[in-house]
Length: 234
Image (tube, rainbow, N blue to C red; front, side, top):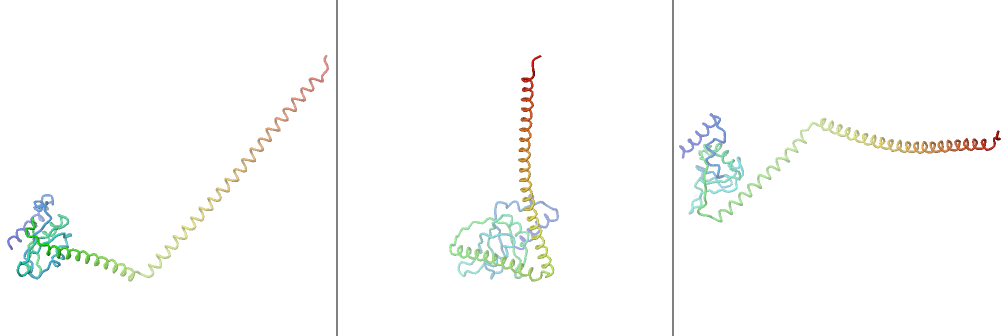
């Protein structure tokens, strides 16, 4: 197994030294499988420990740790499937050749087919997966809570006071702008009423002026007619 570990490590190092793109990497030969093989683990490592180790590089959705059928003890190797196939590349690159409790482990791409399906083992594994994901969610929630508490604890009181003062100033400015806007709207409405009244007065004055003009014109016309009637014939 040690020679296989060295071969994988050598391939990874060659690609790193030559800046080989992922599209031309040897990993692409296994782009149709999301399984990896792991071997060389200490025998007292459990499924939960394996999930913790390999979940650093993706979300595990299935795992098979091979155990002795008679004793039930771990034989130190098995298969694990990731939700995203690209996680297998990260796991192989980072965990192959790593040491766990003093033992060097092998991690490589693999194809897996469950030949001897064990329902009891699958139920136990699914329960372990659920517990692992639940633990992660709780840890993340605790981290967020601690971060918020630390931020509140170490925030400069003067900075908090300045932030509050700035917030109050912005509120006052918004209130003043709103009040000024209401005044402008009221002034515009009042001016509009005055303009309407002025238009009415001008219209009425214009009508009265035209009426007076018509009356004067009719008076002149009547006067001329009376002169013509009263003048003697020569």
